[in-house]
Amino acid sequence: MSKPKVFEKPTGVKDYLPEAVSLLRGIEFRVLDCMSRWGYRQIITPTIEFYDTVGVASSTKERKLFKLLDQNGRTLVLRSDMTAPIARVVASLLKEEPYPLRLCYHSNVFRAFEQEGGRESEFFQTGLELVGDGSPEADAEVIALAVASLQAAGVKTFKLALGHVGFLNGLFRENLPGREDEQQLLKEFLLKRDHVGYKQGLRSLELDDKVRAGLEGILRLRGGEEICRQAHAATSDTVAQEALAHLCEVWEVLKAYGVSEHVLIDLTMIGDFSYYTGMTFEGYSADLGFPVVSGGRYDNLLAQFERPAPATGFSLKTNRILEIVSKEAERAGRRTMIVYTGSRRAEAFAKAAELRAEAGRSVETKRLADGEPAVPERTPDGMYLYDGRLYGEWLSFD
Image (spheres, rainbow, N blue to C red):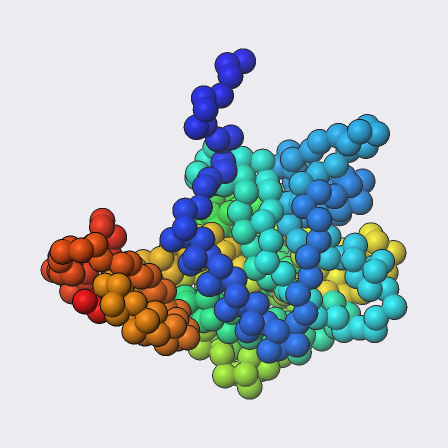
């Protein structure tokens, strides 16, 4: 095996330069501030956890975990999400606190690099968990706060797709009784959002034409509150009907929050069906083809840490949001340069202090050398170019 070059990094990790870090921290602080105003308290957990506790409880597939051994030969993992570590804390250090618990976080997480799609091995998540409340009100609170968090992060245009694991579980159980492998196959297609593959999978199965048409028809169950009415006719299964009732009540609460315009019901949206137990959702920005937020209800996780409780939450894909916000930040031009001569230093510093008090403002200062002109180059978009850097505002005290 060849020795890595001096500037080489492991595959799937990256360096964040000052401009990106500034944007990333801005997203983090604004979102955490938004969450705190909803009553969520920030938590920090270790980067390294025991495999036998957090590792096995995580929703991350085994092959995607980063494993290592400690000096005693015990297997450790780099955290692959924040939900399992928070569940561990809720069941131990916070075991005396009454439910519901509202916790939030911003952390880096690690998953083994995937060649396809340029996925990163280390990335950032900002999210929250609402533990101890199994009601539709709790699910709606989490979704409404996901909307508020995306807005705080600077994402302008987005939609959240809202589904329920119970609807599809009940529907498939009713129409494909005892055919678990075939149910699994169809769920895999829906999990990948592969509707063409789903249709082809249905056609490959031995099914009554009416059953096949009904199962294919769920691909059209996507829209607003009218989907609640339409979906009731698709199945008589008790589990599916209960899931629909829960989802439709969540929708009513979202209307009361005034955020339903950002949400659509999509009953093919299943999330990780081995992990989620109820409502699931994903959010997409108009500027990206990848989800910028995902979440849902996971009522079985806390039992693995011996403090059973319902729970729901979400995580923002902060790295992906950075791609959107960076474009807008570049146009905003909130960087100011102040140049000054020695005789006017105090005036320049006073003005810099005044401007730095403004939120989102970055101010740099530079003393001019004797005889140095204080005239920057103007760009076609109205910016100022000086010493190879762009500024939105230029002030001279000479």
